Length: 372
Ligand SMILES: Nc1ncnc2c1ncn2[C@@H]1O[C@H](COP(=O)(O)OP(=O)(O)OP(=O)(O)O)[C@@H](O)[C@H]1O
Ligand SMILES: [Mg+2]
Image 1 (cartoon, protein in one colour):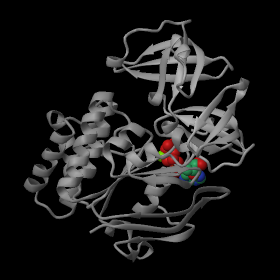
Image 2 (cartoon, protein in one colour):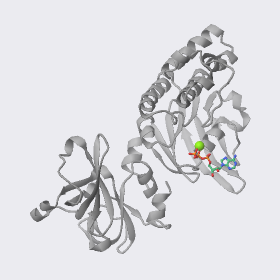
Image 3 (spheres, rainbow, N blue to C red):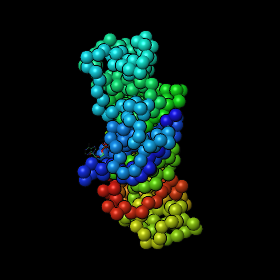
Image 4 (spheres, rainbow, N blue to C red):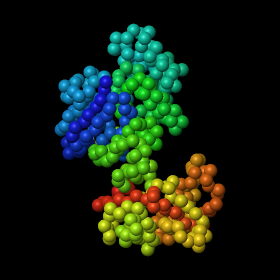
């Protein structure tokens, strides 16, 4: 049964360190998504596990055995590269049946498995076409079907749904997870798409510049991002810079630009320390400015609606605070009553329970947010 362990794995290409002392354990039967911006080392990680390339330092273990002793073809892994190659002279069905037949299955058996995978990827109706006759998204689904039909217990999938339209992407990601769970496979699935990662995986591994920035169950990574980078990359958030101004009954008051203040529950930071306060857009409330007179409620920041975007299930209000900072408030459509117009004066309500505090990044907040 495939379990994978990476111990202090570093991969360098000349001066470039693509992966830097990565430690990672993947259990048998787990569905892991690797998430990270372009160039963060996702493909390198898959290629190392597939055995296409070797670590510069460190060791990879497959089922407890050092992978350096297991040739790629004996790793029982199906690697679907980001730039997959199809067999151009073979029909769709034969592209898929190639793997099972190479493993010794009869043509009949191989076709049966292949048809099942083509049905799953919604391509059975093009069974007799040639790859060049397929659209880009169909070619990707063919490559995926071929990887799935190979019978391998470990799936290494590099952006397997990247070329598909939104609907099919969502449908196939559920089918992929279902297949992995039903057949007891192990999957490592690379994606840029944080929503896909959250929907499909048991565990998310977030890479940045070749290092694991955070790993955990999707809900943990979403609720407790350990850095500005992860908060920004996974789910997005509003970020405000400030200083720890004073302590108040087990909470801290953060002084923002322009004299605004917010109360946070975090007391780990020293008085005077420069920090960044973050809150999810969907946790950022928006209320009419008239509420202020009623007084008493903490963390109401005055501003003006600058823009309104309708995104289907949510409405996003872009609000410019009186100090010039711009925050988004995401309101589910059924909660929104079209109360606000561009130019309206409003209050943003930042519930201390939802505010997280991070040290101010050495490269500056702006550049840190651009790192995604
Ligand atoms: N064969 C190679 N030779 C030189 N540099 C390489 C090679 N393969 C990868 N790199 C470098 O290693 C770093 C990580 O690359 P990798 O392909 O793993 O990123 P990625 O996270 O998959 O990015 P993307 O999301 O764009 O696919 C990059 O800086 C890349 O240029
Ligand atoms: Mg890649």
